[in-house]
Length: 383
Image (cartoon, rainbow, N blue to C red; front, top):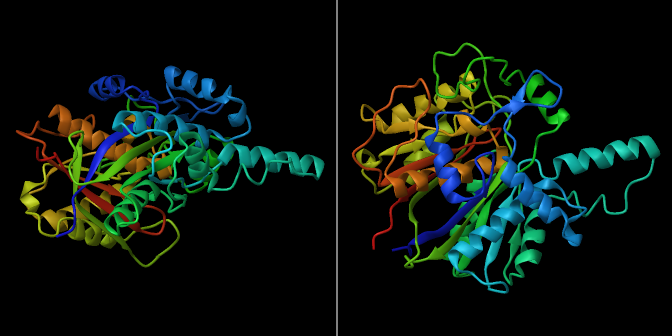
């Protein structure tokens, strides 16, 4: 029987804040965190004021003055997580913090300078490589274990969690810090999303129509942030959740951004995550649900296939904080754990819902371009 893997801490920095009490209070408020994107008529979800101040304080530390915000967000969340888990600087633990896009703004700024001058900045290469996220976190925490970064598009953070599970069960580490970080709020990124015709143009009270299956326009909105969690073998006293199932799958590409009408990848990943578990015992599913017509509908179709006539409650946080790409899966895990801890369901505005009698098992879904899906089943720890 494989050993239990527990989450002993999860922390984040996002438009909801960086303090767990503040984050939960913001989840309870039926409001979104979108504001105007620069001089455009579009909106995006930026870090809140307190989080921005925390990042500015990090930037004042000399060794962080040349790094991208994606690194700073990861460092800020990681400091909080290891402190919450009781890990010490210099401890032996692995790190896998990925990002869909990596050093987005810094890379664009460096390239702009190169086009103008024909020369590259001295540190343009080491500060824009994807691996510098985990490397800087490891440097900051003085950790002694392996450090890994990757991009698996929008399912990056949950693939990091899978990697952590694999390392722990292989006996190659006793602790692993995993998650995702994303700082994608640039003009070019917004233009890319608009070119795909998936960005919200709604002026409604809630411009992201995620989980509104009758919508006639795509409504994805960009967000920024980072979230990481601490994984440990067994069920320590400070465990806040147990990973009772995990699944993954990739479906064949129809084109570069689509998944099939019934999301075959999600059907496979959810079925794998639920192996040995009565599907009727799942109380809530935190969906990927990016706010696009096809993305939301296909994921619901997959859930209906797996759960038949007994659907758990469905929710997502993207109507509130937007799509944070590679960080989104771990922000969904954080939301799931908070709902379990507080025994309170956080739903989507204007989507019918009920408050469940209990929230003890939550399934989290994430998928990236090309259908690389991950599903994680969490339960409250048995103590």
